Structures are given as C-alpha cells and as structure tokens.
Amino acid sequence: MSTASKPSIATKLAYGFGSVAFGVKNNGFDYFLLIFYSQVLGVDASLVGLALLIALLFDAFSDPLIGYISDNTHSRWGRRHPYMYAAAIPVSLTYFFLWNPPADLRGNDLFTYLVVLAVSIRLLITVYEVPSSSLVAELTDDYDERTSFISYRYFFGWTGGTLIATFALAFLLVDTPEVAGIRNIVGYGQYGAVASVLIFLAIMVSAAGTHRQIPHLRQPPPRRQMTLKRVFGELIETLASRSLFALFMAALFGAIATGLGAGLNYYLNSYFWEFSTTQISWLSLSVVLSAVMALMLSPIISRRVGKRAGAIRIGIIAFTVAPLGIFLRLLGLMPENGDPLLFPIILVLTVFDVALIIAFQTLMSAMIADAVEESELKTQRRSEGVFFAAISFSRKVVQGLGVVSATVVLTLAQFPKEAAPGEVAQETVRALGLYYAPTVFIVWMIMIAFLRLYRIDRAMHQSNLKSLGRG
Image: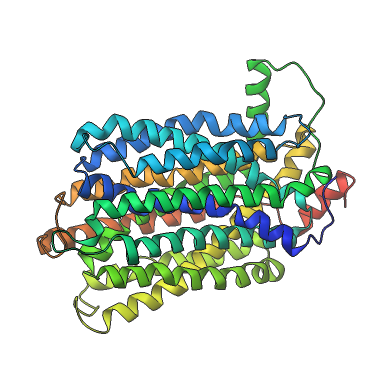
C-alpha cells in the first residue's frame, strides 16, 4: 500500500534530491559535451552526434526493460532501491572518465572511446533514474501531491545541474593567456571529478532518504516464469496506453527541442551574442531563481486549472518566448553585441522563460504518474517502472536526436571547429541563428499538439482510484 496522501517534507526532499544526479549528468551532456569534444578535443561535430545517436539506440531497448525488471523485482529492499544503490559507484566513475580521456587520444581517434562511455553512462543512469523517478506513483495517490513531489524533483534536477555548470564556468573553465575559458581542457577534467562526486552523493542521499518508505510501497506481482514472449508481450500491452502515447510523443519532441537548444547554448551565448564567460555563468546561475519560481508555481497551476490545461497554456507562452531574442536580432530589433542593454534583456527573458519551461516539465511528468492507474485498470499490473522508463528514454533523446540536430545546424551554417569567439564570420553567425530559431520553435509546437491528446484530468483520476478501490 502507498503512503498517506500527505507525505512529509523530508520524503519529498529526499525524493527530489536524487534528481541532482540526473541533472548534473544531463547538464554536462547537454551543454558541455559537444563543445568539449568538438572545439577542445577536435572531434568532428557530426561524429559527436553519431556517438550519442548510437547510445540512444541502446536506450531504446534498455530503458523499458529496466523499467519492467524493476516493476517485477522481489527483494527485501523492495522493487526500486536495489538498483538505486547499485548504480551509484559505476555511473560516477564512468562520468569521471568521460571528461578525462587518455592523453594520447585526440581528434576523431576519440570516437570509439566516446561511444563506449556514452553508452555506459546512459545505461547506468537508467538503472538509477527509472526506479528512482517511479517512486512518486507509489509514495502518494493524491493528484496534487504528485505534482508537489515532481516539482521538488525538477527543482533539484535543474538547480544541481545549473550550480555545477556555474561553478565550472566561474572557477574551472577560466580564461588563460593561451586559451579562452570555454576551451580550457584542464578545467573540463576538474569538472568531471567534481561532478562525479556530486552524482554519487545525490544517489546515495536519495536512496537512503527514501529507504524507510520501502514497507509502504507497492508490492511486485507474484513470482512467475519470465520468458521473452511474456516480457515483450506485457511491455507492448502496457505501452499501448493512449495517455502514455500522448506523453511519450510530446516528451520525444520536447526532448529534441531541448537538446537542440542545449547543444547550441554555449555556441549562441559565446558566438551569437558574444557574451563573456562571466556573463554566461550569470545566465547559468539565474536558472536557480527560475527553479525556485517553478517550484512555487507548478503546484498552484495543478490545483487551479489542472495539469494538462496548465501545461498547454504555459507551454505555448514559454516556447514562443524561448527563441524570441534571436528572432528579434535577425530582424535588427535587438541591441548590438557589446551594448550595455543586451545582457540584461537576455537575462530577464531567460529567468522568466526557464521558470515557465520547468513548470511545464513538472506538470507533464506529474501526468505520467496519473496514467499509471489508468493502465492498472486495463492490465491489472502496476507498471510505474515501464511508464517512467518510456519518458526517461524520451528525455534522454535530449543527448541523442537533440544534439544530432544541433550538429546538423552547425553543419548547415558551416560553423568552423576549434574557433575562438569573435573570430567567426558574421554571415556564419547569422546563419546559425537563422537555422536554429525557426527549427526549435516548430519542434516545440509539435510537442504541444501531441500533449493535447492526453485526456486524464482530476475527475478521471479520482474515478480510476475509486475503480481500483483506493478512492
């Protein structure tokens, strides 16, 4: 049986803090990986994208399988916690080596190394993240409490990733007489060490902090003989949910757009806007304020208008504002680079827009938990792991198709590698913005269109719980 509908703040904090691991890993993959391996180590951008696409193909199979295995695990530590504990050390070590490659490998010779580590890290983070995130549907049945739980998770995920990135930009990726800070290879190695320790701590604190809830969580189905036919048959039956399909497709296109924006973030800030490393670090740090705003905003929206309606409304606003600054620059309506007004304008736009984006993501993730009961009525199985694995897979498309899209934009713009800010031709920089802004806007709007197919509201959720004898 799940815990009471009003869980303690300590439980919410422990559940939420676990997302720091995913946030740190995501932030590194989204913002630093492409520029590190391409501009610093000299790997062709297209090969970096290919390496992440290969890792994505492994995710397509591993994510739902790990979710299914987690759903059906019998152990004295429940269905989720054995995997959370087991992933802590391996994922931390592999993340460290991603940013500290062998000194004798450079350029395209690093391709195989990158593929192996990208696949390993994403597999190991799945072993942790899918069981960990699935806990929300077991910790409470309450419609609004689930939004509250997810808001803590997104707050810590965004904040953890943001703070480590800000720390790296401010103290590790510093300018030297020989090289610009964003191309400081020693700094990336130091970042890898700090980030790895933080990933380990986040996983262990979350696993230990929610450990006492194990007796109250849902029990696995009775032990039965597992065959490939049964496993894949039940996976297909579970994933056939219309609500999950709507969320999966929305998350898929949302992840592509997020990955495109994240992969080009430092390109846009360094080359398009020509901001200094210090200014970029302030933009990064401002996301903490955005996360605080979203932490307060998300539960309010859930209570007043519901998750689906709220997500659609704020999503349209957020994803229209996101590329607005670039559109205005292309139209000649923004201050020139170096103008004292430019940075404050971009900073204010970033704070409010990112707050709306985090709130949108929080509401959409909370909608996943509500789809679990709908599926349980149909299949007579609790499949939190499979549901959250499907969305976890789509989120990790951020590093796959999203970064591939970013490399396509760089290729179309004929953007040079190993180029310093201020040394790229203006027509190339303008082409970067011209290819990026309309592309990311269109993909965002496709995401909103799919989200409209989701049908579970508060009344339907209560009806599902009543039918299951828990209303």
